[in-house]
Length: 276
Image (cartoon, rainbow, N blue to C red; front, side, top):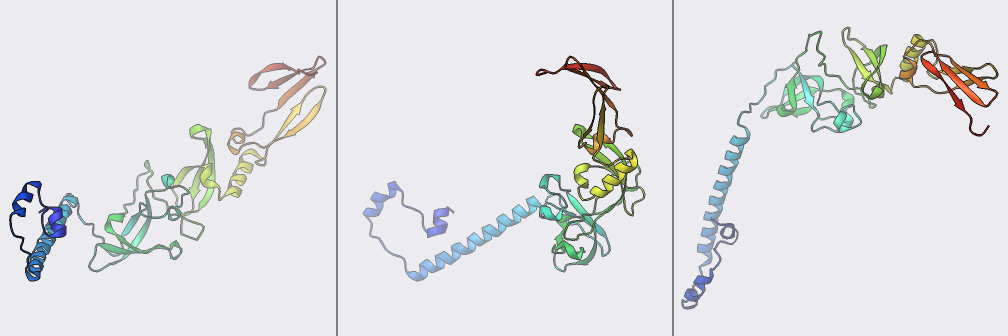
């Protein structure tokens, strides 16, 4: 059956049929015959659509099986269809693929969906299809870290809190990273970049004071034989946390307008002043 016939109820005339039809007397069909013809065609089209839908369903569900959960199971929720504001990240590419775990409290009757016990402040509809859920399996391995963080957003969504900062190091591209101990997790200690700790600046300052005995805004003192001056400048947390003491720089200005800088770890270098 062509699409033209399905739309209008007849096939278009071909050029070869024009001469034959011109010599014949055209007879119009009655309204009743035309109506019966259209109803029969409609039934055939509906049957073909149902058959095509069943074939597509079988092809899509090949190798798939519906997940079943029990009341009280802990499951993870996929963030694929959630807004980025519900993932705890500022950008989609940095968001976790799964959040949770959450408790299953009800199996919605007549469907493959489940109702979860979500925090009241999450503002999410608590019913999810099984395709968006997976069973949470707690990993007890001490050498592998695959714990899924629970998010704490500005609107009050539940999440983990940092108890203390233990160490500092330089990560990829020399970016500052801090070793964090989480509240309520004895063995859950992870390295986090400084960009993830913008909500706890006081905790970082407290760690730096404890490690270095100074404020995050460090001071570097320049000394020389002829002149003495203090230079106060902002220093990055990571670079200042590398050593417990700020190295002293010896600055010597000679009478012929040249100055020499000496550093404990580097060789001295003399630089002339061009407009002296």
